[in-house]
Image (cartoon, rainbow, N blue to C red; front, side, top):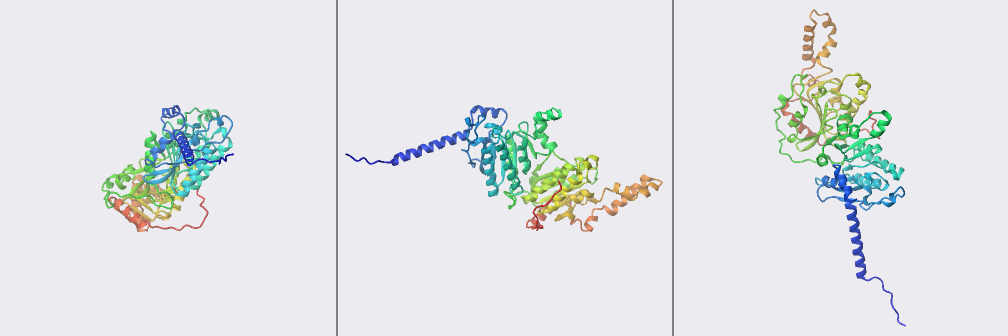
Length: 531
């Protein structure tokens, strides 16, 4: 009888098996990266939309994307889901570089379940959000989804709750940017609303809580998807979108530009860049840009172009509340946030929308260590029943609260008018501006000379033989006594009256001095700002 020793797999067998498993893995990865059928990709392109991976490739520096959860699949059964378990589960997540700096990204893949969110889909987003918060790096969402996956029921809804909770936890800690590239309806719309910036693409992106069919059923109003929640509606009317673009390529390129102006997190300063624009460059054009006559309009954007490096800036909410300008720019290579009244729109008054717009921008700048420069030319708050009943007191207080709460360097410059409560709210020295400057054309007062004279001298005017001549004389007296350019400076409410042409160099010098500013706030859980 011959003994036959049992032998295990040879080294050659083991190597063959390993190679087979590697080949299997590569095939699965290729399937995951390829996504659904070519027909689904063609349908996506036919709608004028890119695929999730094409969008990520546009956003990130070439070759820097590292994917997380590419092999994830749902585990739901029933309602036909068990027969369709694609890899990625309809969302591509990972990290990469933008201008050489780390960012995290997730992108809905509309070709898979219409980008709808299910349990596995949500878990991938939760994971990448947690990674972004832990790493202290920006988070960009490329949104193109049909909402909650109905087949998975309440599990899908709970997934949205996890996203909202993380959006809130990350608020003011890392920059969060939502890029709307397709539909976003119902509760899904609240995640973009919680982020710092919302970009939208015209025609293909829509956001609304209740769609056109529901609106028609409840109110009888007939409206298209774009008419209800398209990019132009949210950029100009509702203020939900900060930016709107005609195509995905230009939209995503502007996201990259915005990221170049933001720090990675709230513990860092925004990135500085070298500039060939001299810090001591005189802005002679400013002397003629701003008319001395307070009733004549001019374009504040041209003033900003003269002041900032190379005339370049990124305006936030350009089409909403046009009576105030909020922009990110650089002075001597350092990022600053600019808040400025726009005399070309409603004479630059503050109203409900302008107050909300500027307040959110000031809060964003303060959260991410961006110094604030405020350019004042404000005749007051917009009067009217609609404004009062709409809560101008409450909304105006939001801007006041944001400025008072801000600890970043703050410099204000009065170009021309600065009247009443609007002057106080627009970062006056009395609410904590570090440096307050004024041009020789400034008029800082409780109200305009005409209105003031009518109140103070109403009896003399009424009793005069020539009321018009008397009123004119009283207006001149009031201007001479209480509105001359140096009145506020004499009382310490303005630190200096400067030549307009020197504004750029003075701002840069003051910002350099304030770069090491440190402010201690009272211990508290959080404030309770007006809502």
